[in-house]
Length: 189
Image (tube, rainbow, N blue to C red; front, side, top):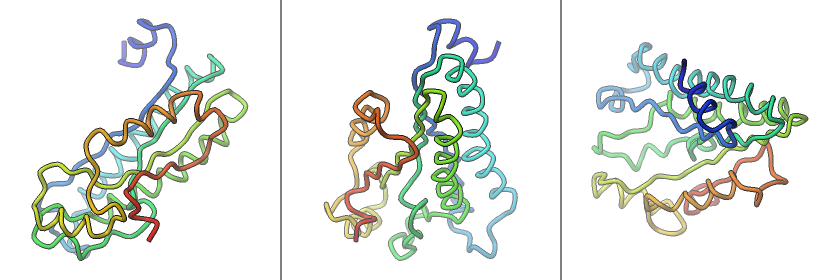
């Protein structure tokens, strides 16, 4: 019995799916130039960030369709909407890659597709696009990143909870196919 079946058996329904998987490239990939980025790493990022999400939406979507209700929240990033500002990374060893940006952008239209596909089944599908979270990164990187946000800092670990609760609840009952952006004003400049 797979994990989805176990969850459904235990609770009798599935109300919300939050897709937040992300393959974290290693330091070699994050520091590789685009011209030298390994194809094997590209394929791994696509496999986890897109194919994994696709498979979860298929499995949970089947259950939600039978229930005639459900909410799917796909997590994306500011780099799904705008190009990575390569200037802020310096020697931080956490450079954003083309594979990451490509998958996060794909999530936006995948969510729109699913919203359109499931619209008659009582299933709402939205994207939550997030900015960077402060998590012990290099101080030069945090400073450079913070200059790009209107709020002047990176997010705290708990500052996305409200957006997730909103999208998962009836407070967003008239919202589907949309992208909620919580990024400290990064994409509004």
